[in-house]
Length: 120
Image 1: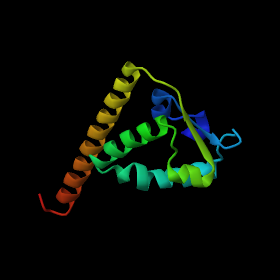
Image 2 (image 1 turned 90 degrees about the vertical axis):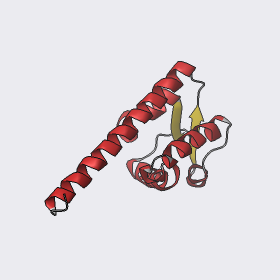
Image 3 (image 1 turned 180 degrees about the horizontal axis):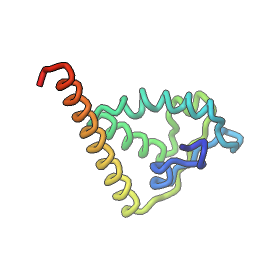
Image 4 (image 1 turned 60 degrees about the vertical axis):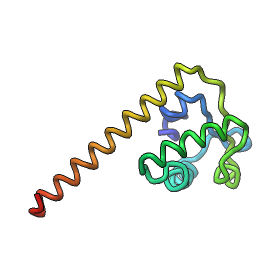
């Protein structure tokens, strides 16, 4: 999403921008590498509630001027502009809703597999 539109919905809501140290946008390959690192380290593979904690930790770390190690190592620059409490509430609501949708989808998939193999 970031490679196509220059930002992600979460970055837009939180006022976060991502570039190289020189200020250039990231390449598609750089986005893939970064997203892999984020999936494992920052999002905790979407295991609730761990990924909620890691997202909030990430936000406050960036806000205090400290980049994540994988951004620093690869030469990415993450900047954040101040956001209102209203925008932060929208972000939390979107994150909570996404979490519920992921859990509902996972539950539906498990039920479908259990029925398919005759367990239910």
